[in-house]
Image 1 (spheres, rainbow, N blue to C red):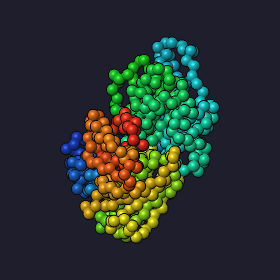
Image 2: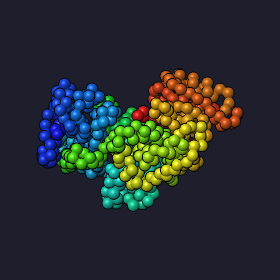
Image 3: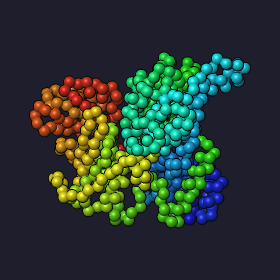
Image 4: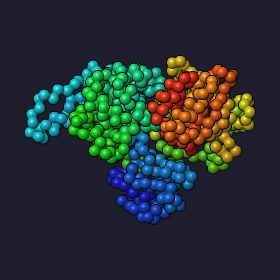
Amino acid sequence: MKVLVTEKLSPAGMKLLTEHFEVEERLDLKVDQLKEALSTATAIIVRSKTRLTADVLSAGRSLRVIGRAGVGYDNIDLKAASRQGILVMNVPEGSTISACEHTLALLLALVRRIPDAVAGIRAGRWRRDLVGNELYGRTLGVVGLGRIGAEVARRALTFGMKVIGHDPFLAPERAQTLGLHLVPLDTLLTDSDVITLHIPATDATRKIISRRELSLMKQGSFLVNCARGALIDEEALVEALRSGHLGGAALDVFTTEPPDFGTPLFSSELPNLIATPHLGASTEEAQEKVALIIAQQISRALLEDDFMNSVNLPYVPPEMMRRLRPYLELAEGLAGFAVQWLKNMTGPVQLAFEGEAASVDTGYVALGLQKGLLDQVADEPITYVNAPIIAHERGISVVLVKRESTAAFKGALVLSARGGGDPARALELIGVASPEGEPRLVGLDGYSLDFPLAGRFLLIEHRDQPGVVGKVGTLLGDKGVNIDRMQVCRRTAGQAAMMILTVDNEIPRDVTDRLAATPGVARVTVINISGS
């Protein structure tokens, strides 16, 4: 069996591979060269530079495994790989410590004004006027307490800092073990002297730190982001730094990478910004670790059928997967919908298998449920393989039940959950798989509806009164938001109703704010479900 390596791997990783396989190292390949090399490979190992598109993968007639020596796999067409039956693996834990330490390095450099001091020395200036701040006794707010966020919190405590955190899916017992208090996001913003972000960039978290959130932060506080650039509204950040409301910011990631260095974010007017070019995982130790781990995983996958850190489907016999896949995707979609609807879930999540759905392997379907619950909140890629482990770490429990069909469907999944907001809410979602295997949402809190469970949803809870639907349509049209589907549900005329729309393009925050202010509208929620 031949393993193709297209980007630099450490000698230790290469040595491990050569003990079991024919190894071909070919760097800086053009597309045609890559396709030619891939045509005889059983496995390929890449970092972030090599792009494995559907076209490229089609040349891999013998390809069984793709190994990503790192965390992110945006350069791999996961759908195309899955369709070809190619296992895709990554190394989610390899750079945790490096990312954590880089976060703390930026934080210390920021509060002690080290870049200014270095620049002064190089310019021949002895700047004793550069007075910084201590971290001891200050409050650190950690947004996202996955592997990296938890490591940052542990180390901050040893600095003598008070640590508070925001993570809707972290069990209180886990927070207690870490030695921190969980608080709502707004409380974290107002109470923290320093805030660090460790969450993924999803539709729900993009620009989670914008003008409103920055205005809630303490005068003179600091912001650190080594997670994803899209989490911060960069224009709003420039305003907060320029006005002096923020004491400073440290960034390792940006909305666009490499960024446009001509933007105000990088102007000399902002000496209170320090930045690095996405170096969170760039240590010799991390690179060595991921090389060894991916080499071990490739070996186990090819020699032992051990699929550790798979990022696509776990292996099951093809005939079983054909039956399982629609319910697996349906459970994932329902869970993702529930997370975005409830915002902050409390207690166990129940998934009921009704009618024909009760005959499938509920354990496999639960993987989809757990993945959907975690995708919106975890600071690392969630897969069907690691979802149960991370759900357990975060104290997320699921309850699976089988029962006779109570709905007008041969087979349905019914998700029940509660949210801990103000006020607390209960939620029931009903989903079915169409004859073609397409996940569909057919019930929401007693309302009957029928929507493909994919795309951008706009849900508007309102009073059933004349004019509301027209105002919504007019506002969306004026803002260039195109409606794909729309359904209005009610139980009693003149009482509470639900307007459900799917739209073609992103809905700006100012549009949802205006919708929420429309007379008769009680709540506006935007939900995004990625298609399978």
